Length: 119
View (cartoon, rainbow, N blue to C red):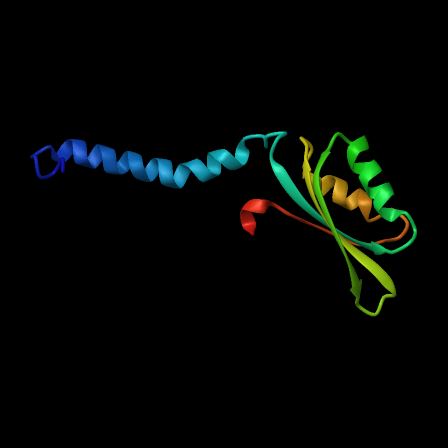
């Protein structure tokens, strides 16, 4: 509309500003620390009947994470009695760091993380 009104300089400045925001904002947002209220997804595959979920939850809460939701289902994948627990957690340290530590717990077979925005 600015061009139609003869304000071509304003139209150029606003268009350039638009592209600066659209292209620059994701880079700036990636540099900002994540909110401690941001929900992060964590999937843990573990051996059933060994109290592993209790250990996983204890490790997460001990590191300052709050457990928002837990969904667990039994899986028959040839590894014996296994359970896949999908956890939604909130907390400041990135859950990826804790995921590495969770793989060292006895009975944990696999750990993966995913940010909910990538669903």
